[in-house]
Image (cartoon, rainbow, N blue to C red; front, side, top):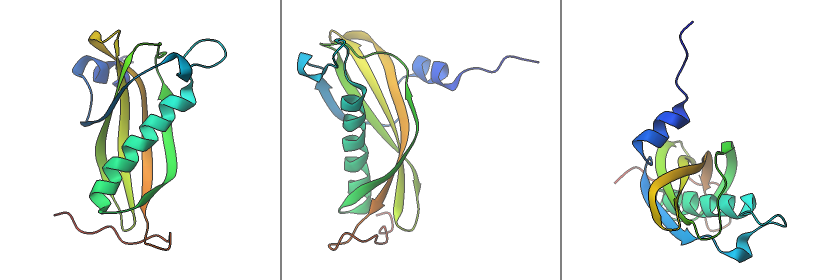
Length: 138
């Protein structure tokens, strides 16, 4: 049986998927008790990025409904420049699925390293916080 290529290895070789949505520096205040960057901090950046991308497509308020296939691939270190990329995967009646990848530049120098990837499902909300239809693409 032939060995299958790991899609994460292929993606890492090709570079980030999607548009740069957020960029920041990992600071000492973002570490866990062991001195590594806290995974929850990284996931919150990904959630913010998914919300910005989906909110733009939905032309308004969105909320996170689900996160799937979350993979922490490499650690993030203090001083790393964290770059979060988003790509629209699917638009449903009220939901939008966004592929999110986080990449880092170690000490702001190449090569770029893929550290995390996930799929976020965002739901468009009306003024009362209830699901609403996503407008047609412009």
